[in-house]
Image 1: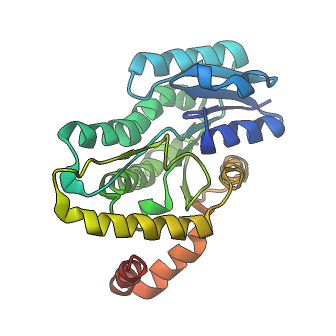
Image 2: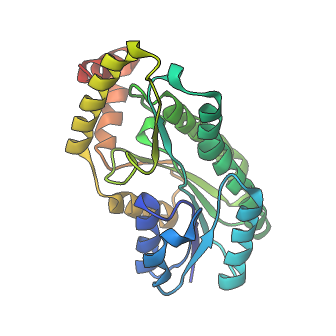
Length: 270
């Protein structure tokens, strides 16, 4: 029986992925910062719930050791943990900027680095990094979150070269709008009380993005199925767009070119 480790599994895409791999007969190590959020997962057979904070190296090491102690093997790592900051860049504090990258980029790198020796030793393994459609296209007010996802895209694509000779696959999942708690629990809104000049634009963009997202949201189970496909299809494919009309948006991005696509995004915010 194969084993998958999933970070950020307390809710949303991570939780849906843990449940889907379990349904497919895998051993699942569902990790999260607060294991009190995992009551449903703790009831499932062959699902191990483990505390893991991607900003703390010792908790990552402990999670890996616990996974191997219980299941004895590891086949797939899903780097899913992350959150978003929304609002005009000027309103971000230094600590908010650093923490966005500490979790979404450095945290993902930290987990990967600690798990790599096991994969390298056994000359096998699949690392799946959950990026975003926003890792290749942009929308207003998400400069920090989307730049962190662009970093994940570049890191993953580059890492693929290094690990392929060791029989370790590296893949990217690029979800579009997904019906999760991202807009509440997993998102931080920047305080613009002291910068009134952004208010009119921010209010307008907030309204438009909410309208567009509500019409295009997909269930997190769609992303979970895509992650499972990436883990089991045996292909060297790098990118897996999914959910929220991601394929259509990327097609438009490619066919229209930069200038026309940016104009389309601007127009959609009006």
